Amino acid sequence: MKIHLLTDSLGGPRLNKISEVYFSDSWIAKIIDTSKQYKISYLVRHSLNTNQIVNNEDKYILPYNSDLNIIQVGIVDCFPRVFLYNERSVLSKLPLSIGTKVILPFTKKYYKTLTSLIKRNEVPFEKFLHNINYLSSNFKI
Image (cartoon, rainbow, N blue to C red):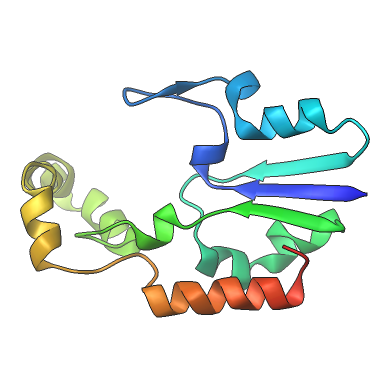
């Protein structure tokens, strides 16, 4: 049996101010270590959301030709955002670093207040549910 593991950064190794997770401590490594009888592939993508998987199934799921796909996603979809991905990208390109040195630090400082006023997510909840249902209907998830 071929199993494919697909996850955002929470499933993979990461060394940052918030957490240190080495590959050997990740859930991916634990599955690989305990499932020697299966052929296991994996893909870790930072900031992966369900829209990206649905829109790029030929990149994230189909090439692995697996019998079972284990997908860990959702926090990127549903985490409260002040700025969406494309907006953050534009902010980082503003002249005089106004986006990265003024707007983003202000946003970080008042994040809780702003997200309580501006209720938005990278992927709206209804779309998230649609995406999960689509993936479950078209692949063994």
